[in-house]
Length: 199
Image 1 (cartoon, rainbow, N blue to C red):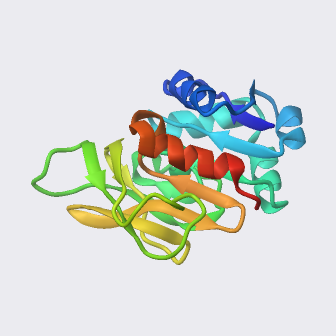
Image 2: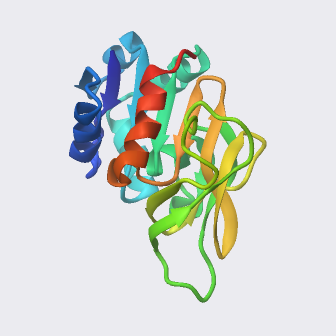
């Protein structure tokens, strides 16, 4: 059973609609005990890094999330849900991320429009469960002002002023900066790959 964690993210219904479209059973939860029973976890996220981390702390689920990730439970972070895996973010330097990966989420700086909003292709760097069958340059929808650094666990990059992590994948841990729930058939394929993969 897929467990969607609900901390109040605005894109939750879109994620639920995507799971419904691919006929995947899921439950929506807001507590640590339910997370500890989960067999796969999706953490959607939109909005502000600090607000998200404060919401996770207020719900008392920070330790449970990290515990389940480290125990090998398959995890998919979407947009802010990916950024939460890192140590910190310039968006809220006073707040700690989950710290699963070292690094700081940074704000775009340059002459292009911020936020980075719209459709872009991504560049796969290696084989990936999430991107299986997605082709050489999957075309996906982005909406963000902050980006994750390219790290050893990066499976695909996107370039907008700078190259950054578009897909992170290491063992049971997956994250995407784009919004699969707003990326049509390609987004559905990527979510299906997560749902159906054996980790």
